[in-house]
Image (cartoon, rainbow, N blue to C red; front, side, top):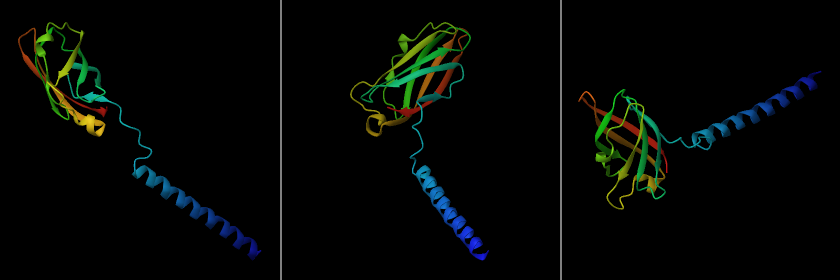
Length: 150
């Protein structure tokens, strides 16, 4: 009877150590980011302007963004500024008389070959600030942070 108990105990100890090694290996893989998928491209932070989509050029030198007017009235964009990993600006004079619920695009104009950080690192984290006026004449400023991979 003693031999059977000892054999069972050795069997359980061997499998216990094997499970501990497996847990340590899986934890190390998670720590090194092997199982972490790349973050989806997204922009967040705006209140009345509704983020729809964005894309960074293949060269990593320009960004285009699509928004919807959720302000409840017609808006005129007066200024667009980029910061963080983004460079350049946008021509706000072409973004005017946007009806409530209508979509509009903001296209970066970097003024040359200025590369975003995305061209070098493959990832980006930048901000876009849009200043606009509503029908009532009130000026609003909204900022979004955009992150993703190029």
